[in-house]
Length: 244
Image 1 (cartoon, helix red, strand yellow):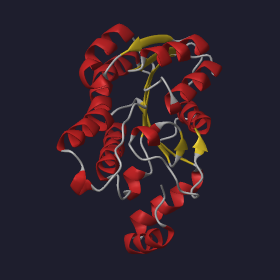
Image 2 (cartoon, one colour):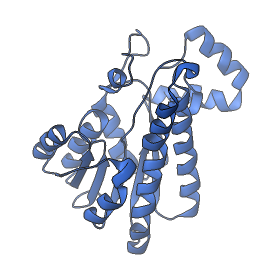
Image 3 (spheres, helix red, strand yellow):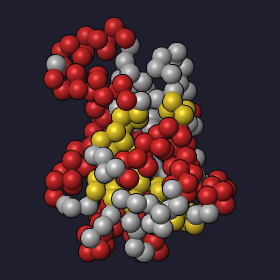
Image 4 (cartoon, one colour):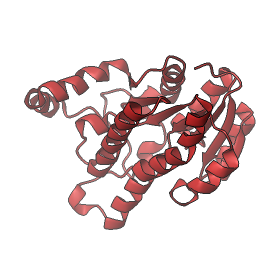
C-alpha cells in the first residue's frame, strides 16, 4: 500500500514507538490522526508531524474515536501497558487493566474500523505486539499472554479478510515503557533498539504487505526455535537469562 495521502490512525502516539511511527508516517506523506492519553505530549507530536491529535482512553472511548476518525486507511494499534514482577504478587485489578489495554482495546478498535476498510476495498491493520508474546517472559506473565492473544487474533483476522494485517514484534526498545511498568530495564544484553527502528519496520510492513516483522530481525530465530523445539529453547533461555 502506498501511504501518501492515506489516513493513518496511530494509538499510543504521545511517546515511544507511537511518536516515532508518527514521524515515519509523516515522512511517507501520510495524513495522521494521533491518539493517546497524555494530551500535552500528544499535541507536541501532532505539531511536529502535522497530524491531528485526539486524546482518548481506548478502553472506554474506542467508539467515539472511530466515529470522529472517519474513513481510516491504516490502523497502527500500538498503545500498550506493562507490569513487572512475580505473577503471584500482581494485583488482580492490574490483570484486568493490562488485558483491557493490550488486548481488548485493539480488538474493539479494529472491529469498528474494519468494515469501512472492507467496503472501500483497501486498508491495513498493524498490531504492535512483542517478542514476549511468542516466547513468554518471566516477570511479565500477563503482558506476555496479552501479546500472544494479539498475535493469534491477527493470524485469524488475516485468514478471514482481504484487508492487510501485520504484526510487528519488537524486543527491548529504548522507550519510557520500562519505567512505566514499574521496573527499569537494567540488563546489558540485549541492547535496546531505538524506537525509530521499530517505526521504520511498521511503515515497511504496510508498504510491503508483510504479515510479520521482528525487530531486531535476529529475534525471529529464537521465536522459530520456540515453536520447533521448545525443550531446546527453554534450556537456552535459562542459560542466557531470557530475551528481554
